[in-house]
Length: 168
Image 1 (cartoon, rainbow, N blue to C red):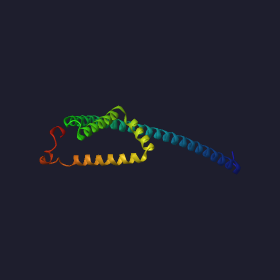
Image 2 (cartoon, rainbow, N blue to C red):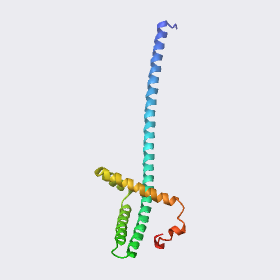
Image 3 (cartoon, rainbow, N blue to C red):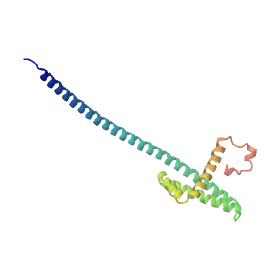
């Protein structure tokens, strides 16, 4: 059988169409695979983000509970100091008021989860941004003083002598 140039051209065109069709199918399969891999990667990233958020929330809740317990202890110490002070004096009233505030804050910390506290803080910041900024500055200053003092060595005994033993 003799092959004509037209037969060769037809065969080349048919082969070219088949190659193009195969390439298009391969491209479509590659795109589908890439979309599936991307979707799985996005889901895994979202799952990892949720696990990370949950772990962080759990740790913050644990810290919140510890802070609440320490606040309660501190409030009780303030209460005892107020009761030991001479009744009716400014010192007794101030210590009583401070104890009430610390104990109330400790109860709030104890009763609410960290995400509830965050929503409350956000709502308060939106309602009164000036007061929020003032409170944030005061809290930052108090924490800096607290952590700055705890990072230093304790005061020498002669400087602690004036602090009653029950308050140390």
